[in-house]
Length: 294
Length: 181
Image (tube, rainbow over all chains, first blue to last red; front, top):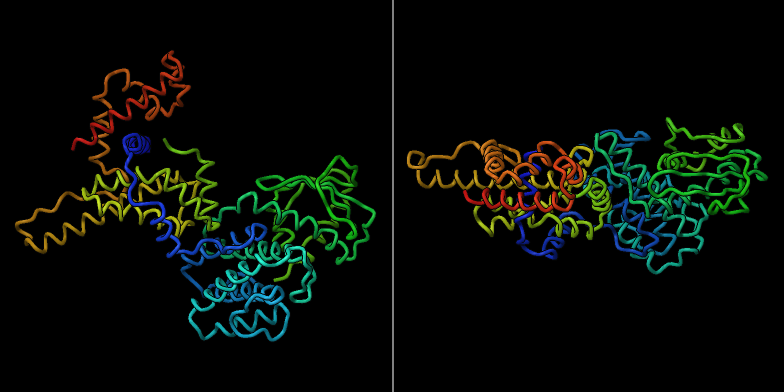
C-alpha cells in the first residue's frame, strides 16, 4: 500500500494535463444516473434521498427479496411512489401511474403495487423516479407554509416534504441492509431540518399515545453531523426551538440519525443519555414511533 | 497529495445524494492523475481520455460500490482506471494476435489487476534507491515509515517546510525516472 501511495503521489506531482472537459464528463454522468431532482432549496433534503435510493436501485441485484412489511424491493418502491403521489396531488403536480382511487397511503400503495405486478420492475422504478422529479419541480411554485392534507394528514407542505425525506431515507436504509450495502449518511444540511421536524413531532406522539405531559418540557441534544440542541415543551400548542438555557424536566442526549430513525419506527437498540425525570424519558421513548407508518 | 479521509467521506455523501458539483470537484482534483495513469498503460491519448472519463462516470453511476472505510477515493479511482486500461491493452493485443496470427505475435507478460503490477512496484522501489541521499531519506520516512511531514522534520532535525520541499522534489524526481520507460 505504501508503494502504491508513493507511486500515485509521484504521478500526481507530474500530472498537469486534464483530459476532456468537466462539462463533457457531467453530461455523460447525468445520462447514466440522474442527479437529484431539481427543486427549491427547502426540498433539497428530500431530493438528495431520492438520488440515494436511485443509486441503490442502480446496482440492485435482486428485486424479489423481502425488504420490510412483507414487501419486496419493487413493492417498496411502489409504496414510496404511492406516498409521493398523494403529496403530488395535494400540491397540484401531475400524478403518474393509475389515477388515485382512494386518498389514503396503504390503499394507494396497493394500487401501485398491483399496477406494477405484471410489468417489468423498471416501470415501477420509472414511475417512482419521475413522480419525485415532477413533485420537486412543482414545489418550486408552492408556498412551503401552505397546509395540505395528503392522505388526511394536515401539515405545512415543507413538513410533508421532510416526512417524505425521512421515509425515503429509512426505506433506502432498509433495502441497503438487505443488500449488504453501506449507505452513507445524508449531508448535515439535509439531516438538520429533518431532525428539527422529528423534534416537532414529539409532542404529537405523546398526545396520540395518551400521555398527559402538556406542562412538562425536555432539553434534547442531538449529536453528530446535522444535530443540535432543542428546547421542547411537550404541548402541541408550543413549537420546539433552539435551547437557550431553559430549565426542563429532563435532558436527553443521543445520536441525531438514531433519533430520526426512532421517530420513523426504527428504534431497535436505541439508547439515550437521560438526566432528570426517568419516567418521563421512558414515556417519550414509548410514544416516539406513534406517527410512523409502514 | 491524497485528500484527507473527511474530504472523501463528504464528497461521497454528496455524490450519493446526486450532487453533480461534487463529481465536478472530484474531477478537478483527480482527472490529471487518472489520465496520466491510464496514458502510461495505453500509450494512446484519445483512448486514455475516454477511459479516464469512464472511471469518473462509473463512480457517479454506482457510488455505493465505494466504501470510504476501506481506502481512499483516489486509490479506488486509480484501481478502476488501471483495470480498465489493462483490459483495453489486452483486447488490443488479442485483436493484433488475431490479425497477425499466433506465431508471429508474442503476447506480453500477464498484467496484474491492481494499480501497480509487480514489475512497476519494483521499478518504484528501484527509483527510490537511486534518489540522492537527502531525498531518498525523506521519501523512505514519509512512505515506508508512515511518518507525517512534521515527524520527518523532527526525525532529521530540519524545519518542516524543508521536509515538505524535499519530499515534493523527491516525488518529482521519481515521476521523471518512472516516465523513462
